[in-house]
Length: 294
Image (cartoon, rainbow, N blue to C red; front, side):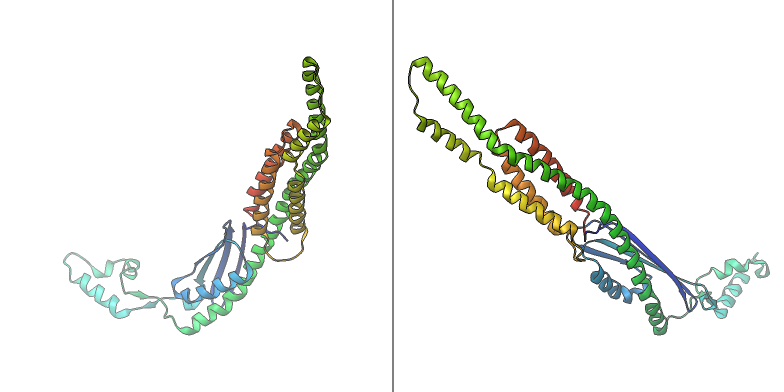
């Protein structure tokens, strides 16, 4: 089964007064590259997230962003009364400043007046318990989107495959006709030339010349290999196996182009050359598209 490498998945949940939001985005990459962005206090969960991604995904640059917001009373910062009292005392000692008229909000913004809730191991444990199902849910969404994108990608690749197969069959049918046409042209030229000088031609000479030409322009092996590569390519596109196939498709696209170039170089016929151009154009589009396949 072919899947795209681009996708998005997210999930949210509330647990023990904390709002968790997790997003996963993926784009193309030859290999799997993970970028994990979590709050500093949850940095210990990065290996857990990376391990999960490597179990579920094979290729792509995957970025995970986790945000946590306290929404319960536990989010309240602690007031440091001693620090606040000292600030007020210092301000009151300055001539011209009436401590009673100072904006309390400004005082709360002073360093050390408010301290965040203390962190402990229980919060990290609770966060891990809440995040693991979110990670699975977001990854499911990502994989589902990559699968849908893969269906569209498959349709495009199948259309290029079918075009190549059609043009290759026309070249295969055309190949013997090219040799026959060469034989007729060569025989006609030889007869005209020999008649001019009143010389008789030997059939063996004509046969030998045609045989040499046929050997130089023989594309049977290349057509057979290209046909086999196409068969393998289509099998991968039709497979229901869940394993990634992007790298294999990329390799096959290179092999398709190699055989097409050889056929083109050995085909002196204008029609065959035109068909080869169409084949190579379709292969180039395949090479571009498979870069997006997982």
